[in-house]
Length: 413
Image (cartoon, rainbow, N blue to C red; front, side, top):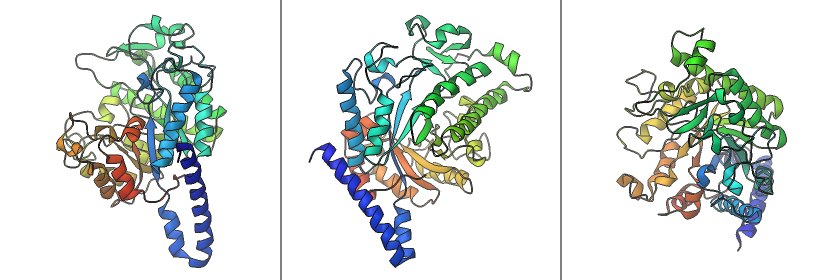
């Protein structure tokens, strides 16, 4: 059976099963309602486009080849009984749709600003929905380029017209989150996609202020002097800048397209318990509150976002950040809030010889899902990333499907 035929059959089966459950609930009462409720969970996959990580496989492919590769990823998601694709559509302050604000992404035609001859985001939404999949559009708010040369950007790139918006740090270019004009611009650029397409979700990952680079400082002195008057501590001002981005985006999304979810997938550690008694039993490494100026716990507790999907990219028993300790910590954070909790899973580590021994076991990820089932707040998982879902190097994804995805599931709303 072809991938396309499989997806159509699977979609028809899902629709039929949904109808059967609806009919059954009228006769079997609570038992069937429970069964129907149990089939609603997030089963997602990230499709990363930055540096052509997952898709397109390389720059400069024809429009037909790009489209065919994208559809293959969608069909693979259906085959694996997933229900949501999170597609990166603004990887480096550019666009995978005909944006009036930013140039076409280089990952398509090979030259930033060059029209690829089709509309990837529009096609992705249409083809995903045809297969019963949700399509979440994944945006990176502040990253401009993975190099430091403004001259390599498209001539029309807003960063070239507003060099005062740009900070060079760690060998990359970023928009300065401390400038109100930047916050206004990046929101308009992202919201253009929300206005144009019936996307099911808007998705941010873990890039707010950039990850710290030893021996370097993020030069926002001028912005802090001008706009940070209400804060005696620069870190508090930086967190307030990110809080404003999150709150304003949430409000705008609900206003423009009320059914579209807003979710964020942060680095998995908010703060360590040795730093803050509210933190997790983890040690060392990055803390999003202190290093990325992202108060992810606050966003959940205040109900600012519809879902959070922390990247818990560590194995069970990993000393510095144990998956078995982080899942209950996040479950406690989400408990009683309106924010749904999904778990980001490191499928890319499965079978990688550079990773700890636990990741050489095809059953490690399946054990993650088994553990998470013990926490009612966890309502799904998202896998990084599409290339590994397709290749499944040691059969870890196949094991997850066999152990946990015996039936199709509807994505939460």
